[in-house]
Length: 229
Ligand code: DX5
Ligand code: ZN
Image 1 (tube, helix red, strand yellow):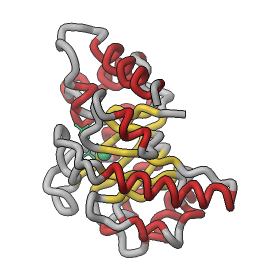
Image 2 (tube, helix red, strand yellow):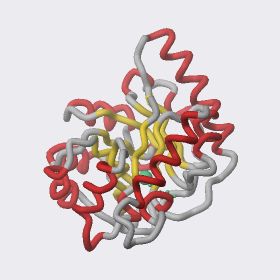
Image 3 (cartoon, helix red, strand yellow):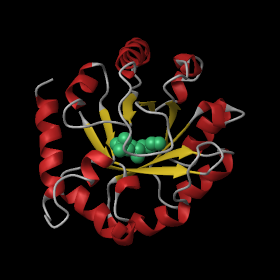
C-alpha cells in the first residue's frame, strides 16, 4: 500500500531517460514530475515536452506536480504528454472545483497540494473530486530542503478527515507527502498518515555516482523503514 515516488528534480538531467529507468528498476513506484514556472514558485523546471519524452521509457505512473499558474491550460497539455496523476496548489487556481474536474475529464487522477501554511479546508467541498491529496513537507520551489516537523500533525489531521470520508463514501483518497522525506523520517511520516512518499535528493543524491545500484539500496532502506510501521 506504500508507494515511493522519486522526484526527478534531483536527477542528472544530462541523462534523464536513464535516471527514470534506473529508479523504477530499483523498485520505485511512481515518477514525481515537478513543474515550476517562476511565478507561482521562484524557480523554473520542466514542462509537457519533457513529460512526453520520458513517457515511452516506463509504464510507471507519472505524477505531475504543478507549481504553476494558470493551472487549467496545462492540464490538457500534460494529459496528452502521458501524465497519469496531476496535482495543483489551490492558491494557483481561480476555480478549484473546475480544475479538479478538468483533470478527471482528461482521464487522469486529480489531487490538491497543500503548502505548509495552507489550511486543509480547501478539500472540504471537493472530496468526491479528489484521488489524492499532497501535503508539502517544505515550501515548494527547491529540492534538498529540511522537512518541517509541523507537517506530521497536519498529516494526522488530513488522514482523519479522509478516513471519515472513505468510510462514508467507499471512495479511496491517497495521502502523499513531498519535501524533505529521507530514510530516517519516512517511518514517522507514514505513522502520521502518509501512504505515498516523494523523495528527490534522498534518492537521487544517494551513494556514489559510480555505483549503478545506489538507488536499489536507498529505496530498499525506505521500504525496510516502512515495513516497521
Ligand atoms: C519541491 C518539490 C519536491 C522536491 C522534493 O518544490 O515539489 O518534489 O523535489 O525534493 P526533496 O526530496 O529533495 O525535498
Ligand atoms: Zn513535488
